[in-house]
Image 1 (cartoon, each protein chain N blue to C red):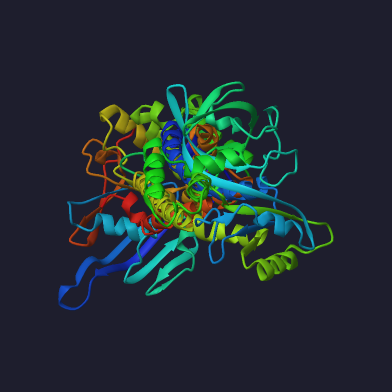
Image 2 (cartoon, rainbow over the protein chains, first blue to last red):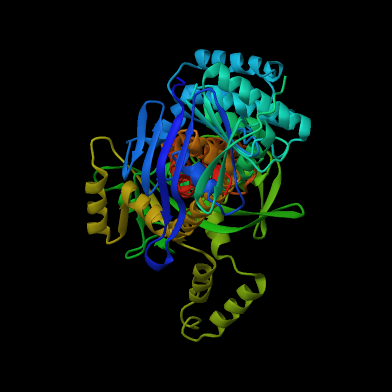
Length: 236
Length: 400
């Protein structure tokens, strides 16, 4: 269930050792509250991907602390046991391309996560259909991903990220393949869903069109983050 | 939980089915090779069964009459008939030759048998048409595989024979269909010389002072008569009386007649263990190579299919799918491919086996063994793809 968002303190990530060691993240601090959508922007090589992988429990930080909801995930070398289950139940992912499973229909693409978590097929599909309905793609529930437009596919991937009601969703360039209106539409949906499901959403982006929509933005440069108040342009 | 492998197969069923058909044809060839071996063994055993003999009496120190040449005087059987435990004994000759019928000829094993009723050693066990050989000359019973028909005239050497009966599954250990003719005709045909050779031999005999003595009238004629006649047969087939052990009767004949005697089990060992052993090893090598090729193809196909899904596998791992689920998906696909391949192979082998010139025996036991072998090969072949899938980093789904 969604909770208190995500908090990281003094997060560090070092690749390699000795003379060839590279510090990709240097004492990164970040906090995103439940129901909030923040932007994470920075140039190539600044450490965005590394930070995203640490937040997504795909790689382990070298040091620092990460708290997801009420649960401590990393704490200076200590980590919780099962990162795979953590990713499944507590972190949602939205990718640059939707990366839907091509051999599953739309509803099962979304329902797969609760099924993996042990819920029954019926219950999982019911949850999936609810979200597809909320995202306006329920009419394509029985279609295959290849039959959907780019915008529809991205909405299905948002539904997939939300279906287990994770406390945090990591969106990696979610609007990159979309034109202006559709990109804003996706951000509108993310804001709506963040509020409705009390989920913290971190959007990594280069997209100039959507940057003004964030109320808070984290800039990452040379492995360090700086917080900035965004314009928070209203949609409605 | 939905079956990911099944959904993937259904999604790309065309690719899967066509790949399975290709693999199936290879499996069909493998099953057929096994069938060819079984057919050879069966041919050998049919030959023994159809001889209706318990013992084969042949020339001393030979593996005759099938594996090595064997020559016995044709009156040896009389002495054997008088021995304790012998119910029936009959001469038999075997020789392979092209039998002509009209403008065509057929490769056959010509068997010279003593005319008689059912159960006579050497006689075909049953007929599918016509009657048995009742006369001492110029009648023939042919296997249906020869293509001969009742009433047709066939030529063996210089003589013509009328086909008066047809039989089935009477073949040599090489798979050549048999043609049965009367023993005396067969003895003559086996050693028949052309006219020029006979004239030359007569002239040489008459010119030999030792064989054409003026003081011994009729000697030269007697020698010439003996030269023109073939008193040899290849074997004597013996049936043992009830209550007697073939091994004991064989030892008795061997001891008192100083001949080689084989029981059914020994003859089986000669045919299967010696006569067709090299062919069997050859087929065994083919089977091993085909199994390796099949494994390589399945491994390559499954590996390629898996590489085509690397991004999906990365996403599945990122969203928390267990390694076991991903490995299971690949394994099920490999097994599915194997199952399709086996079904296609079995059907293909069943349809094309009768077209083969030699007998192909597809045994259900071999099919079951083949199925499990294919499944085992698929499991082994999927390991490479599973290893590749498990090495996929879930981070590949995220940006860099």
